[in-house]
Image (cartoon, rainbow, N blue to C red; front, side, top):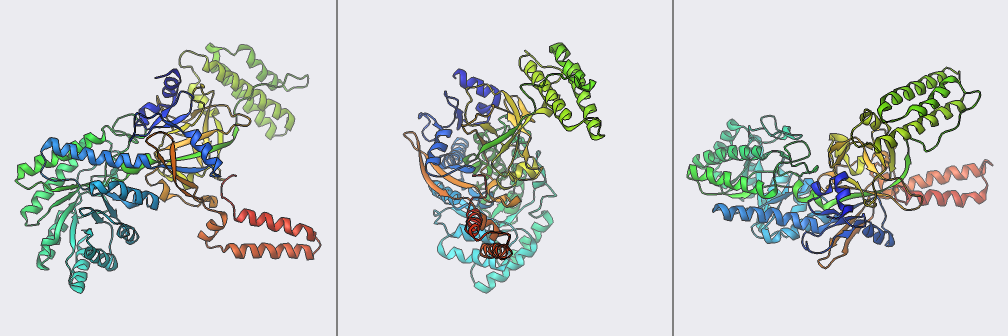
Length: 629
């Protein structure tokens, strides 16, 4: 590892969370390494952005890397295959991708393409998602697993799709749903392929604990399952029940929770078999997590296992349970979504400007200064390492007293302005002393309140909704100058006019921090930041806060011989498009504005020659990108 890489890793921890996909290059750029051609040098992410800029594709953008998607699908399927071979498991693995995790066509299409060698299928939790699934030519043994609440129309389409050769499984979520299935079966005269969702009692730990256990939303308890078996037997359809669905939980942080939940699912499977249910498939739902922080611990935003360990634990637990019960090994199914797509997408944006909470210089003392200003200036005289806390206390006290005097009218605007700059200069000097210290100081925690604000060209609510809504943490780093020591710390503010539109939790090498180490902005060169592993949910959950729409989306492939290929470009929303989303007709808006312009001309408040300029400006805006250009 070079000195540049070592320094960057010691600050940002990229080597811990980057999965050897995101790396630091010798020139200080963030690089993308191709996992399908690991011997090739990484491709500079800033150079990719420069190339896209030349093609008139600008930030903010979501950059999808198809190579990463293909790699994750390979890893999960190959890891299950290895575990099955090592354990002498007598069944196979047939994974499905939950469309809800990322419904974008470019993502789903490529998952189907890359999953074909593995008979990889899709999970649909709604009628629209089933429509998406049925528009894809899936391989012969691939499954379409239908979860969620289903009406007769949903069930009818699922049953009829089997005429085309689809292995469409209707997972029964409630006893009432059984009645609907029976009614549609009698209407069509065609048998369904059924599953039953069993609610496990084992509850996982972590952020998503409520997705498991007795209080989880979907699935049936033991009493309801018995009722379903009896209903299906009475209707002559028990032989159609081939799959047991038992969701382990979402983003399971602890691999021992995986073992416990799988063990409980196996107990239900063996008991249902004894009841005469001819089960052939065991669907263990989601749960395979992503180590966002790289800490490799059973904590929020991290996991204490690898993909290979997860697969081994699942296969070994099922094999042991089935052998003990004398039951044939079922086909294993998982619905891994986050682990498949999270790494494949990143959000990239530029910093527009910065609000700095220090100053390089300060005004000199003046004869008519209030004595508190003189006292504030005097703090400079005893500012040293062993008196940092004292200097902090004194400077803050004097500044706050001066603010109180300004509010009461005892000092004027210019005096208050001078006081503020003197204070910021003192804070800058304190920061410099702390930066030059060998170890921790008395004011390290207090300095976090003086982190700069870097104003960035993105919408938190549109592109990173989980960061705002549930305190999800994604790795964020500058994309350039990582061969330079960062000389500032900042929180990130988005382009919306909302105080919640900020990011103030960051993954660093030494843990989670309330500020991000950054570099002083240059006069001309753009400063880019990247947010990584956002492929799961973030692209589909965003809202139109301040009517900032979808960003530009670019899909690339890392070529085996180096470099990249542009596979697809989707332009971000224009203002006219987002207006239509919220029921405004852009044509009506133009007409209304034109009418006001004409009325202003008729009233003499506007010259006729200005009409063209005003209308052109309005049309340019309504047809333009919603973000800063």
